[in-house]
Every structure is written in C-alpha cells, then in structure tokens.
Image 1 (cartoon, rainbow, N blue to C red):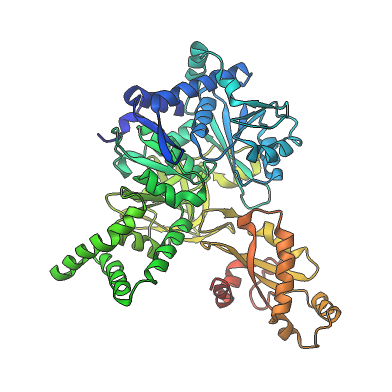
Image 2 (tube, rainbow, N blue to C red):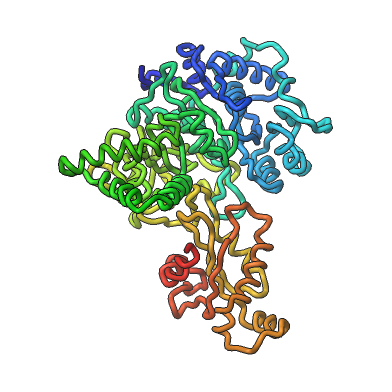
Length: 592
C-alpha cells in the first residue's frame, strides 16, 4: 500500500491531515521512542488522543486563535503533540532552537509577542527561565517534567488532566483554513536580528502536495520509518520528517541525541532519513578512515567499486565483479544504517557532487532539493525516478521558477510566505510583485532541472545547513584595536575561517611590549606568535555567539584590502567574492 495524494486532497489545515491519517491507520505506529535500550511504538490513535487532550488544556488556559506560543524542545514525541495541539486551536507555533542562548530566546519570544512557552525539562528550562525575565508578555510556562521549584512553571500533566472539549475543539478547527498563520520560523537573515518567517497552513500543505510525484511512500504497518535528529525548529526537518510522515501515515523514530545517531540508526532501521551535506561528509570520512586501515588489496577493491559503480556502461566481467563487491563491501556498510535505508533526503546547504556519487555507489541514493525557510521550505527536488546528481531537481508542485536579469532565482507559488513578522521593509525587499527573491544564482536545463551556481547574498550556509551572517561576526572581530579588517569564510564548509589584516601600529607596539626581537612587518604577520595571540582574542570576542559562528582558524595578511587591488569598492565596502578568489590558496590551507 503506497501513500498517495488522496491523503491530503481537500485538506484545509495541517491537523486535519493528521486526523485523516488516524481514521485509516489508528493502530499503526506513528512514533517510536527509546526507553530501556529499546524503541517502543506510539500508535496514531494514542497520538491523536494526546493532541486533543493538550489542545483542550491549552484552551482552558486561555490560549486563543492567533496567539503565539514558543516551543523549546529536543526532538521527541511531545514535539508533535504540542505542535499539532497548538495548530488545532488556531494558535501559532514559534519553534526555538535548543542551541539558542538566553538573549536569542528572549529576542524571539518578544519579537513574536508569544504569551506562553513550552519546554521539556530542567536542562532547557534554566535558560528559558533566565530569558523569560526579559519577556513581559509571557503568561504561561509549561514543562514536560521538572524539579524546578519556581511557581512560574506548570507541568504538561496539568494540561492533559481535564476532559477533551470536543465541541469547542471542533469549532476551533473549522475556523483554521489554508490562509491561517501556522508558524513563525525565525531565521538569521543578513543582520544580527533574526527575522520571523510567517508560514500559513497552506504554505506547508502545498509542499506536502509535491510528495507523491517525487517518491513512493509505503504506509502499511511495516511501512516507511523516518529517523528524526535535525532540529525540528528548522523547516526542512519540520516539513519533511514531521508534517510529511504524519500526513501520509508513516512513522517517526527519534534519535536520543545528535551524537547517538549512528547507534540509533542500527536500532531503528529507518528507510528514510532527512539530512544535511555536513552529516554525509562526516559519514564518508568515517567510512574512508576505516577503509584506510584495511590491507592494500581491500583498499584497492573498495575504491575500484566506488569509482566503477558510478559508470553506467560496464562490461559483463566488470558488472559481475561489481555485484560481488556490492555483497561483500557495500552491503556491510548499508547494515550500519540499519539495513533498510532506501533514501537520504538532503537539503539545507549545497551538496558536493562527489559526496552524492559516493553514496549512490553504495546503494544509498540521495534526493537533493533546494528551498528556503521562506518557501516552507521546498522550491525544487530531484524525483526518485530520475535523479540528476549536481542539480537540485525540478520545481515542486505549484511552484513557478524564473530568473532575474542577473541570474537570481525567483519563485512564486502557494508555498511562499506572506512576509516577515513585524518587518515590512524586509518583506518588501524579499517579495517583489509576488516573486520571492532567493538571493541565489542558478540555471535551468531544457527539461526543467535547476542548478545552483552562485550565491548573490552574503549569507554563509555551512555544510551543516546553519545560516551565518558574516557581517555580524566580522563587526565583532573588527572592534578589537589590534584588528583592522576581517573577512569570514565558510560556505559549504564545516567551520568558519577568517582572513585578518592586523592593525600595524597596535600590533608592532604589542610586539615591543612582549620583548619580541625587532623584525619587519611582513615577518611579524607571518609569525605564529602574533597569529596565536589574535586567534585567542578572537575566540574570546566570539564566545557569546553560537558554536557554528566561531572562527576556528585565521590567516594574517600584511597588506590591507584596498580599492587599488580590487578588494574594496569605491565606497570602501568589502568585495567578498574578489577577496576569496585572490586569497583562495590561503583559505584552502586553513582547511587542511
């Protein structure tokens, strides 16, 4: 039995899709959670029961349609319970990343005007309580479990304890349609202040309507199983391994933690995994590290298999050898993923083609797609039946793609956000005449396959899919008296590096104070002692930022950027692309 478009035909809101699934798959597993070293199922009937109890409890607590409610929680079954409960009563879910610092939490809660916030346990609650001190609109704080003595915190059980208000809940649900605001998904944007992307029920449902034409999904009792480990605050994970499976009768297992994913894969035996390029890079690195420990013959056979498997035309002898190697080599690797994995769905950052070819050779195909939070997030995706490595596939159902004169990709469709919350200027800049300006440069083949060729905007998307505004990091670094200029780099890379032009006068004075032997300026910039000193200062400066915003390595330049060498504009603005091209070798050395 395969999932089909009938699961969402005529659906007006996201909870309706879930409740429709329950009618057909009440006893089937909806979720899997780990307890006592084993994974246990939660049926669709039980999930619906909990959603309706929580929804009724939220209504009794005074949560009205349109109210914003923060959700700060690890990936776990209750994430879905609270999300669908909020959506069922017309409220707006405001997801918060578990990695958020106190200032980030308070900013998002205040900007969104949230009146309540929900978390899991004491680990996250401590930061939340500190943040809420700066959030005067917060009226309710709920936790799944807590030993906290604060009278501000109520337990989840208090919301579940009452009766289900069937009539009131049904009326609330009737009033939720495709145009109803479902969520505010905050993204870093190009400034230090995050922007709240407004997404409606219809925006997300439009994404789900693309699924049947992309991949066949099995919703029988032993059907497709997802492993959820990317943050559910990220729209890729939320749409693809949250709304998608619950709308099509599939099941979701939750990894214990990001660092236990490898172990959990073997336990869960997933068939579909949502991932980002960085994870695939790490996995490939670990596989190759193991291969390099093998005897010479085994290493050669492995690389022969990977190289030749990607070639479409092979002779009978080669094909027979590849079949044998698949059984002796690739099958063992596939077992590390549980033995049932049939597809990675990859997004969030550009996927290097050599990574895609590597996993394809191992019999672990990748569906690469492209999108933005502003498009809920899907704009295009490779169909399972015709994957084109190096492209991001064809436009999703109902999505129109075209190009501006400079090659920027523009998108229009029912999946595009209505705008940014409380930010009309940013909305006007992003949405022009109904078209979303993506900030990415691309091209399209004659049969509609999109390729991303460049990035128009300065946002760095690292290989883990994290969005980083370089100006934010650079402005902090440049505030130090010993640093004149900085350019941060890290697109498609696992960590940030920076080119630094030190302040000549301040650094020479420091060198004299340290009693360093006199030398010329170039020699000082090339010395490890100055590099180490500035790296330590940068580490201290950036410590309040997120881990992925830290600059791991730096390269010092003895000549500043200038208009004469083409690295500055006439108005003294950094020409980022020109700098990265000019110093490509220096940047590359920082990743060795």
